[in-house]
Length: 368
Image 1 (cartoon, rainbow, N blue to C red):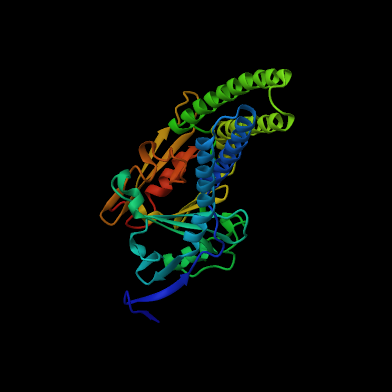
Image 2 (cartoon, rainbow, N blue to C red):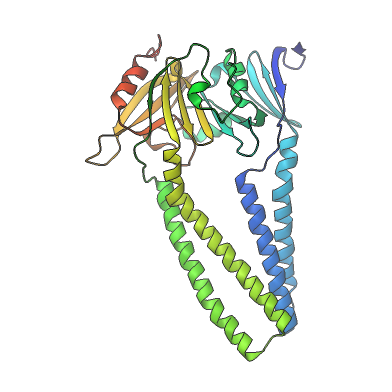
């Protein structure tokens, strides 16, 4: 079958199987909804108890409710309108009149983010190495919520999918290509304090102080109002509820930021495993998987982790592609602080073996 628009053979067509909302949109919707509820509660308390105009407060609540509704529904509508096509030359993403494409031969590596709620469904992120990080986003195509993303990746790579693919719960080593062998594997032995993690930690401390100051100031004030009987019982209950919801929101945000700064990195490290096969570099990190053809590796940079008594090392894989050599996007020289899964082996013991395998890999590996 031919696509008259592109004049290329169509190998696969699809759409999101299970439209989902990204976490930032969920957070925006929940926070905006809580702000709207708190605003209405304060407006009722002020209007009933003090008889003051509350038009501005109700306007803020209405605006927050609108933001919550849009953040909850618009991403779903946009996701359901997306269509994906794989031809013999390109991978295409379409939504209405918008289109993005990436040459199959230019794809440097791919990342799969499995959906924890729907088995066998996940996002397939196709990355092309670029010379500078500022251009990275223009060379990324993401196919959201596709069924069996690892099977689709095999089609894009031009290999025959094996029977075990399509099940993200199976170990990565059990979903290799036919005849592919694991040569080296390792676990990270430690974590690092990146700039992002340090800033998040400071933010958690500041949020905790703000929450404490908010509650320590609100509780005595509410107790005083209750003793003076300045407000009707129903109005006082609404006011206490509003303060309680606002305080709970602050506490939840504080705990979440602290979790992201101190607990999540430890859990991520424990769920990470690195593989070098005779064909690819594979990384499994929780529900994320990275797949990199070894022929894309131009250099391997080995660097100490920073601890004077630590023998572990970080391995940065500098990637190569058509008219592009990637340093920052590949994670080398400190890349990856934004939390993305990138081709980097962090704090591995047997770094020399991995470096030797990757440096003396397939024929033509070091031609660059």
